[in-house]
Length: 124
Length: 110
Image 1 (cartoon, rainbow over the protein chains, first blue to last red):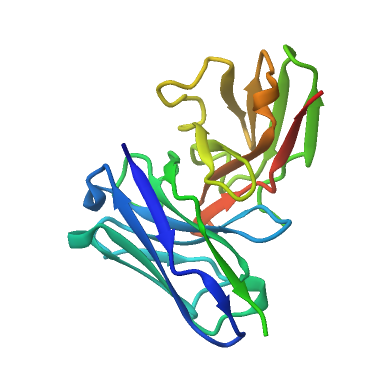
Image 2 (cartoon, one colour; image 1 turned 90 degrees about the vertical axis):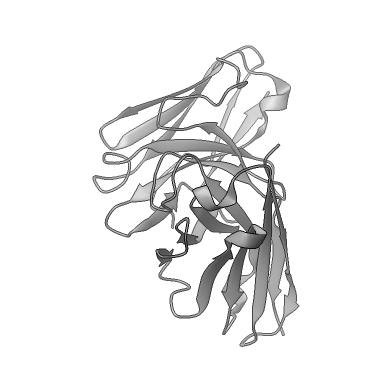
């Protein structure tokens, strides 16, 4: 059974950093593109970042470009999101998600497995 | 403000049919596959429709997807109380070079 589990969230002051992790199991991790998607309180889903199967291609939403870095460790089935210069508007539940059937993160078929999320709260 | 536009809420009685719309543009809905997700706030979204029309194995035929031009729709027939949740559409935007989602539609089964 496919499973994604996020960790690393918490309460952090504005301007500080946080690193999120996503552990994958039940599928061949390095065959698929992966995404980070967040949902802020009272708002809808927002794509944050995506990464191709080997980490060679990466993309970011304009709202996080230059502050967040996505990476992956295929040997250990881990996806990461390094978040710097955090702002109150980054407060959200962060989900990792698997691309349905492609090693590219820009494949639009769908995201077929999501984790339950890890909560990031940016507040002084 | 979401790139894809969905109605904030829809409602219908048990056993009835509901359609949730998703309006986009030439760089997203009209050009790429659309997918639909069900989410209860605070939990993981679940894929309902992929490749605009297709259902994952095990998903009832009550759920269907369609698309015409810059708009896509999710149809749910035979509504059940357990269908109450929030539903999102999503796709890749070829101009923004990122995934875009609708603002979500809360379904109430009266």
